[in-house]
Image (cartoon, rainbow over all chains, first blue to last red; front, side, top):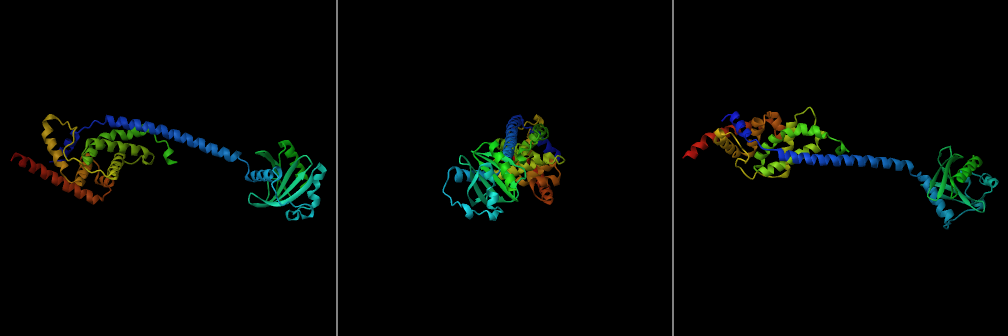
Length: 189
Length: 165
């Protein structure tokens, strides 16, 4: 027997592969369609995640809004300090500076230290008899320009003050919040 | 995210599907069963499609497909169930008897020798390519090829004589 005879014998077996090819083509077409759908879904997910990252509130803003909601709006019991007990010095404030808001009709009610997004912060609460706002001071430099965001019921404005990051939180509208933040920035710096 | 890379469906069909007949011919010898061979070839082609983004265009696609087929066969752990010439053979009338004898003799050879004979002689792969497809050393391919040729030759000279008796 020669190689040619073996080849001839084997090649005499010319199998009909049209059915297999048809099945394979159909499966491939279906898989290709699913792949494209999966690729499309992946793009949508990546885009949505990026948008969410861009649009979600700053974690510090969110923490300040939560804290204000609990401690000022809901008035959950806390150990507030008043008068000379207020821990102002640790954050570079004097009673005189802290009371400058009186000019705008707001009195400093009470203060305390608190943890804000994992950092020890000073929480000052001001009132004009009708409404209250919170002013938080925390170590670190915030953006020097005032920037504001709505977080749930609260309006939060952030700015830099006395080498710290300041956050002003109120349930008032954004215009009032930004106005208060600008005033605070002017009084504190 | 590799699986999301869109392999070109027309390119795959153009490059891979023309090799379906030789894959099926080899699969039939490997499995000894037409239905199992068809399933094996179908699985092979689908696996090849799914891994087509890994296929290096400058390499031999036939060798790549045969390697997938052999690996799939081993992974499925299926053994040969029939040793007779498989149905579907339609050789010219004058050579029917001769071809059947060759195929019968081939079927009686050890599986590893058959695989090497088919790859190297019928499918035209080099010893190196056959070694890569079967994942064995090239020296083993050479020795199986030599032993297979001898065994086939011996079978074909002895068997007809025995049958006449």
